[in-house]
Structure formats: C-alpha cells, structure tokens
Image (tube, rainbow, N blue to C red):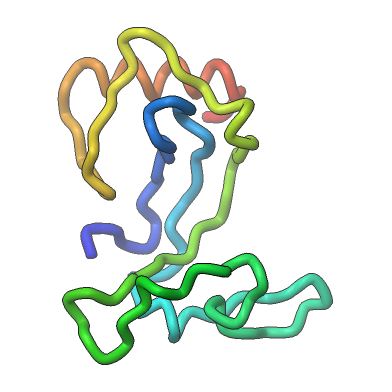
Length: 119
C-alpha cells in the first residue's frame, strides 16, 4: 500500500536475475480478485481469470491480511528475466516495496537509465 499512482518503480526480480523493468504506477493497490485487465482482443477480464495465473492457492478474498494485492503499471521498459540487469554494487532489498535513500540506490537507477536508455 506504499505505492501511489504516478510513482516510478524499478523492478528487481529474485537475486539471481536482477532488474527487469521500470514503470509508472497507474492505479492504487486493490485485492487481486478485483483487478481488471484487457485481454489480447481488448476485452476486460479479471486478472484472476487469466490463464497465466495458474497458482491461485495464495488468493484469500475473505482474509485481507493474507490476500494478494496488485497495482496497475504502465511499463516504460521491461525485459525477459534472461535479459535482467545485475551488476556488482546494485541496490538489493528483500522487501516487496522499498523506498531507498542510500547511495547504492542512486547508482543503480543511474546505471539502469543508461543501460535501458530511459529518462
């Protein structure tokens, strides 16, 4: 619930991969069962009804504490996990969302901007 519309996010996958994207949050966090996306034909459908979500064991619509929540994101740059960027000295954190202020963070963002050619 730390993310707000307009926030820029830099997505770091699990450590063995690295950073795989940068985007802008377009909508606040909502329970996953309420999140709506457009399918390939432009029709709206619930994210939980999409075929790509095969493991639904972590969805707990009756328990706010255990349920999954998602935000909308407009991707500026996204790469496949095999193309994710990881370098010695990059910022890393195990939290789902972090608002770092350390020098490593500034270095990480500036390098990713250069590598991905984004402003």
